[in-house]
Image (cartoon, rainbow, N blue to C red):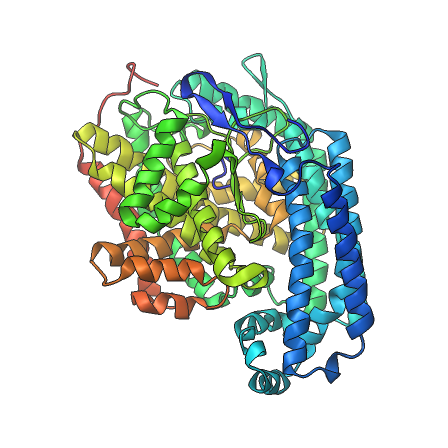
Length: 622
């Protein structure tokens, strides 16, 4: 997933490595482990098999589910899983191909055609999940007791049935499934293509969204200001479309939530994440209560470092003082990340190396025209392997992004092989815990190797910047979504309404030492992909970061068998809930003191920075 707000050829989606000057060869993924291309006969054979299998399941079982015993139901689930994994293989190939070529109209057409064809299989087998959600707790328990095979699916059935209180009639569920391909999925595609097509005028140079966002982290203030201005103008030009998109998708969600009986706009995400709303409220509430101690305090310090009373909006992401050491080559980044994983667990390091072996075919790191911005690790299907997409520019934050996505990738690889396609799916909160832990491993290793106070200052301040982006900013994004959904219940929102909400929340979260220019900064809500693709996803980052602080403290304190416990956590997929997963580490996510203790880790880093000698800016200023 795209990790932060500022970050985020051929049919096979890329080949080997391509030179990027001083940072060296950057890998382009090879999707040949799926298919050799869209014209590969195996792709069409798989689509045909999925459709035939879906029709067969529908003919054999629809209307007869109540007659199935435990073993029969287990057989059906296993057969359905095989069908869904084959469909997942097709769409993973299509999605990854499209991600690096969003402006290719013919490719977009092919991807949409595949999605529409496979939608038929989803509709034909929808009766299975509807039946499972209709089962009473007693009937489900009786089936589990009658079959040892079915008991292996017990945790998965529990999670499927979490949606039972919110199910609609079978006819309405089928209609919603039929409409999905021209609903949110279609809007998501339009958003991605709009962002890929958009160009920002930065000092007279036309730049992509990724390039303009990268400019916000430049050491030169003139570059940062020009990037912010160019981004603001470009987003303003797209504002009518993006405002309409936000109004439409928000209203769609409000209507769906009302019909299903979700009492608050974020509740469907909590159900998907298998986490209680009071746990999320405790996390979010703790972060908001710490705005002053964290972001407000840090940005006051940063303004002082830069010789300013207040930071301009384009200064917030400026590199902290100290020597950066130039661009970091791809090979150095890979070495640092893998050694960080190795130092914790040779097993995790070994799995991490799979992503870099054989010509780096599991990673696409080169920024390219028409490629999506940000970064993610796609789990794809267990019969293939995960793939990582990022836009590597040679900055320290890019190294940490690589560590973040590799944390996802290792987690996905372990869970997929241990649990299979259905049972490997994990809540977003646990997925982000795994990725942030990967970042922490690399950061702590680098910190321990600092030889001077200046090196430590540079690394520590960079980590604080990342943690504020992961915790404070993501919670403010969650707050923005919440207020937008509440305001939308009163009627359509104008671009000015959205700008107003965005700037109000930014002032609350960033504090009085960051200037918010509504005309330049007020449109930045519109490029955040999570608002479109996965509503209320964003709190998962803060949740994961805080959990990692608690987990890493257990590791530092020498909890016996920590490495094995952590690998077991990653391998469990979706089989355990948070309480059960965290019990071996002595962590209780319902305890407000736990969240405060995790946030104190960030506060302590800020306090350490406040006592350190501030190095001069490399080159004499910003």
